Each structure stands twice: as C-alpha cells, then as structure tokens.
Amino acid sequence: MIDYRIKQKEKFTDKIGELLSMFEHTRDVTLSEVSDLNQCDLDYLPDDSSNSIGSLLSHIASIEFVHQVISFKRRDLVEDEYLRWGIALELGDKAREEIIEHSLSYYLDGLSQVREDTLLYLKSKDDSWLFEENKWGNGVPYNNYYLWFHVMEDEINHRGQIRTIKRLLENNK
Image (cartoon, rainbow, N blue to C red):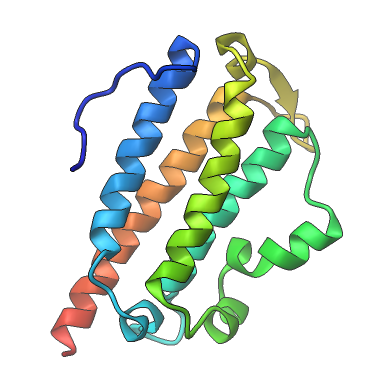
C-alpha cells in the first residue's frame, strides 16, 4: 500500500529520513504504474524517437547510481561504471537497440539494488551533509540536497512518460 505521509525514518537523521520518505512514496507510485506490464509492454516504442518503459526504468536506476558516485564518492563515473550505466543514462538510439527483451523483474531488481546502496550510504550521513556544497565543472555550485532532490524529480518526470506510453500502448491494442 502506498503511504501518503512524509515522515521521519528510524536510523536516519530528520531531514534525510524525510527525504527517504519522499523517495519511498515516489518509488511506490512508480512500481504501481508498471506492476502489470509484460516484456512486450516494457519494450514498446510509440515511435522511432521514443524510449521504452524498460529503458526509462533503467534510466531511473542509472540516475540514482550516478548521484551516489557524485555525492558519496565525490567523483564522476569511471570507465567500467560508464560501460555499465552509460546507455541507460543517455537513452536514445543505443538504448532502443540494447535495452530490450527483459522481464519486469529484471528492471525492478536493478532499481532495488541501487536503492539498497543509497540507503546504506545515507545511514552514514547526517543532515549537515545534505547542505555540503561542491561545484560542477563549469563552476556552478550545488549541494547534496539538490542532487538527491534531482533523483526524485527525474523519476517523477519519467513516470509521467511511462504513463503516456501506457496510454499509447492501450490505444494500440
């Protein structure tokens, strides 16, 4: 059942716990949206320039992984990480060609594994960590709070795309 309350989480500081509560709600709604999809549904492309639902689920996991690297390890992806996550991160033609023919459990396992790591990392942080600042390569500052807000924002955005693809899929059945 989806929880419609933002609340603190045991074993986490106040703000991190509230952020995790929002993550959980966001993920629960996403999982509800895809729970009845089969492999053909996950691979469906409305047109030649769209992303599939499977690709979008992989992208959601990739964004979270990248933000783990940036915020917890304070670096960018290394080559083997980019090889693992780059296609899902960038989407487009390569994703349409390569992120196909997977079951729903494949995508859900990927989302779950990345989230488990996020939770482990966040258990070791306190609220002040959220406000620690760094700068992008172009000199623009950001803080960890923004990075993790963006993870949630990205998932919500792509869930909207998933809903649109599902409507188009239903219209084409």
